[in-house]
Length: 364
Image (cartoon, rainbow, N blue to C red):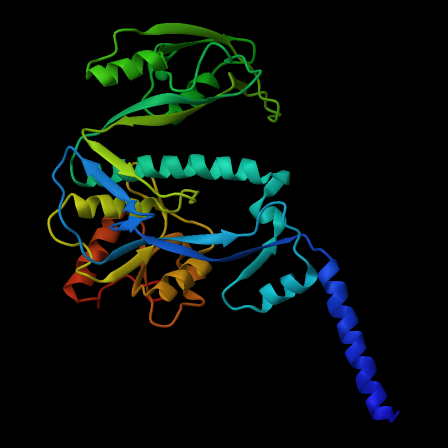
């Protein structure tokens, strides 16, 4: 056999051996890639994404698309070949497994957490949209979760409305922790609450709750706090009562990043005319009750997914602008937003066709 031929054969066999080895060698990485985008103004799975009843709504045009990222599952074992392919791919991103599933989080735990964040983002989107429209929304500080085995277990329950702590009125969820931590571990703290069942009955009957009660709990020391911070073992959150019904239906989506686009979709349906002027606008961003837009993960994949779907403009959280601007898909304009008000102002320019003053990512 000629020497050159033997060398080529040996090299080919070596390459095949390396590829085979790469298939069987697993690496601690996961992959992110562009996911589906859904128009919040339209239908998904045969039904409207947003359904509003009890209030006049208006016809809409154009797109206000929320965007998603696909990720490999928690128990998926990526091999070396897949990792190298992902690193070389322009649209995908390979990241350490712990970035997506920290502390050994299981697929089930991650799904549950994402579902809870998605539900909370829907509530905040409704509040932000209605506040922007000057529609009053009643808000309550509630017990979100009760830690098993904690002093609060059996005394406080998820959904209980927290009216006061030690006689001090509670207005925000953060007030609860501040008041509890004024105690030392082992001291008693008094919660004034409306039980969840009473609150639900009052809302159904459209009346004020008739029943309040004081619950005394002995604090304990936080297990992960060297300063011996006092806790009772609950997390506080916010619940709302809306003056009409807003249903958001979107299956197989989790996390908080659709909040901004849901809020804009609600606002569009409750106001005459079209927010987009018929344009294709996509975007992402968390939103809180005050309408502040927060950063999200996977921005590079979301812009790619939006452009592939046909988006012309992408509403981008201010804190994600720098990362998004590094590799903007051709033909997509990244619009910097920090609040729902910023987004509405940008949409006004977009539908008018005068985009010279749009606050674009990467431009001063």
